[in-house]
Image 1 (cartoon, rainbow, N blue to C red):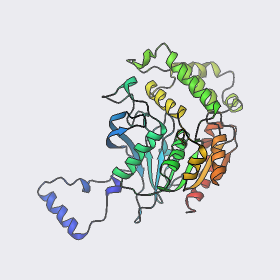
Image 2: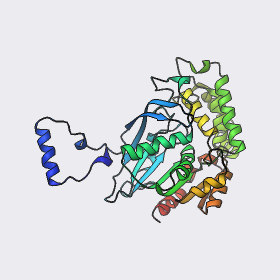
Image 3: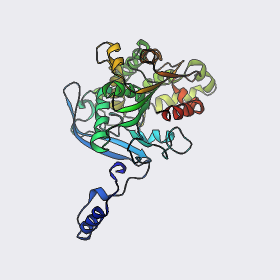
Image 4: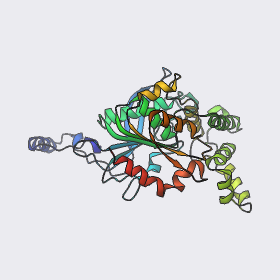
Length: 355
């Protein structure tokens, strides 16, 4: 793994060479993974806040760049809802939001995304037998990856988009001294009422689909009604109408039911939905107490017209802790990150360089 590669003293190299000469295995001399290659961290059992555990828990991740001499340039980037670490590749690279020449970027697959431990890939707890987890559980597993596998004692920043932004808020509260900076992007410290209306509706549509079979299906169902609800809230009515003129709508609507949420698994979708529904960085207590725990330098990015993650709770949290804010104003709504990346990327880059 890239973070385990170190500079060997001359005696260490000679010792390692001697071991290789007799055919001994020296794991620490393994070649580091190529930038962007999928890797796995095997964590054993991951104990959850409910008291249950994920058996054979593993976390997928990808890295770009390398740690600097002081090991102070790592950036953790957990995935968004239904996304994977492969999707984050679009934000890492020369000329992109995060430059591997400056940072050691760690994209982390959140629990339930089909790469890390999920209902769809668990052999011990498959499908609906997989235990319910929260964003807090996601972050605890990610902290174990950072400390036990990557051997990081501190990182420069934690950042994420959407559900990744929710995890970033969780990181800020649960491990406040672990990072210098935090950048939650279109995330929230706790869902607003409209968020819950949407997510409960998606969960209800999924459970009521005839192909659901209480989670015991043999082929992943497309869940067309779920995708329709999701698409209605990704942007705004104005943006959707502009991108989907009436002449093309019949084919577009049919595709929602034909493809639906595929290739994402329905059990995984429901598990991450439930995690967002129960997301609360105050853990049932007062938000003011959670806000007092934050030590990081924070940039909160919100989308003014977001219909999927209401910007209000994030903006209130930012005001309470004296954080800087960056507001995305376009009618792209929740997907304003993509629509306004030319504005957002320089703002993130500048913020990361400030400390």
